[in-house]
Length: 399
Image 1 (cartoon, rainbow, N blue to C red):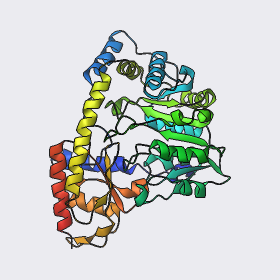
Image 2: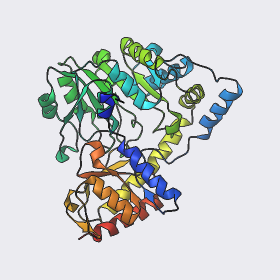
Image 3: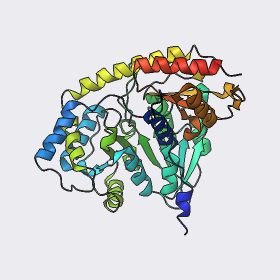
Image 4: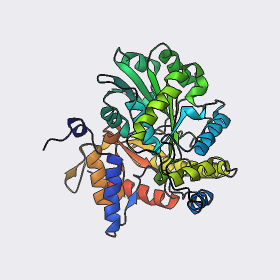
């Protein structure tokens, strides 16, 4: 039997694969410390869970509009206007099954065969696969260590061509936590303003910034480009609701309508109970305090990991400005061995580290850079300390 050729080109998510492998070992009783998961280790706030129970008790368990519950869409646009001083209408917002579906629906709604999407490296693992699934071609843009892996004007200009249909920007970034300042974004916007291409801004980590940095949504800086911008956000990272699968897309009404059309024939609406709980979350006065408290804890963990990492030879990383990841250059360890097995790339490093040190990390090849590994610091200080000690011993045991 023949299956879809386009699906054969799509790779399984390596981040999920690593977590699955580590979880299987944990289920067998192995003492594994995992830095792999891209999700908060904090529980969903109690008042959000209570709102879900209340919704069920009231019988709110039927379908909603494919594009989202009106109550939630109003909460979404009101929260965005309050945070970023830009007013979308409810018709310019879609509620999807997580940020992933926002991204896919958004790409599917604009791409034709041969269209290219610019993706700066390193990139979140699913960007190129979504472009493939949507019928487009991912074009990767090389970035540099000295620029903290942020796209520059020169790199952007060099990458643009007649087939370029869109660009995906992610700030704060997964996997390395880089963050574009207002000035850095404005430089890129000046170039994009002259091009007839779509701009997809993944802002899922907008509330997870450190060192007093202030986030500005891209739409604040170029409201004149509203018709070409899709902003991606959701409940998963900031509010510890990864499993609830609630994401938001903000764009012009035509783009949103086309995304809703796709969704109506694939998944239909997001889980109704999760939508009611999300609406309660976004209108709750305690939410900002909870987010601020957890952000402080993340920042403390980041600083701890940076301090411990500095004491391990051969490993190099830029201290992240946001999100909850370190992207670590391991290239100095290539060709070194442990128990006769050689490190040749990020996959072999991750496999040998899990095998010999009982530590799970994500290989950098998942993010387009095979000289790196990604460590999440969405875990306790005790586990961070224990895990970094194991990594240090592993590196010292290489020969």
